[in-house]
Amino acid sequence: MGDRNKGTVKWFSGQKGFGFITPDDGGEDLFVHQSSIKSDGYRSLAEGEAVEFVIETGGDGRTKAVDVTGPDGSSGHFARECPSAQK
Image 1: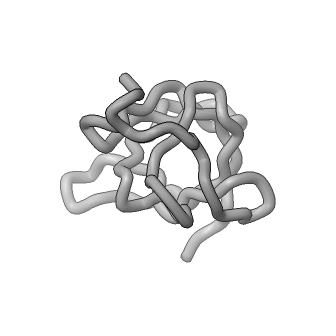
Image 2 (image 1 turned 45 degrees about the vertical axis):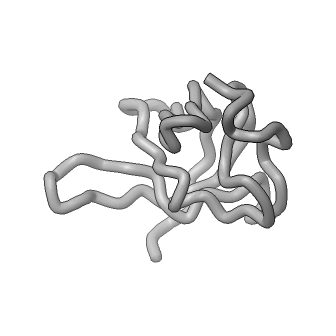
């Protein structure tokens, strides 16, 4: 995979299974799907949470965040609430 980037979760909907990450180095917000989150439990993110990720360009030409982890590549529970309790 490519270089690891750092960013902050702008918002994430546990019910819809997607959200957006704002990269620390600027640029446009990146789409993130729950399937791209490396987690031991619910694959969900909390607003304002620090994350690391790889930027990938999809078949539609849009960039997205994949291989999303916590700081320093940590996995585990990100947002500890059930997805139905989120946006």
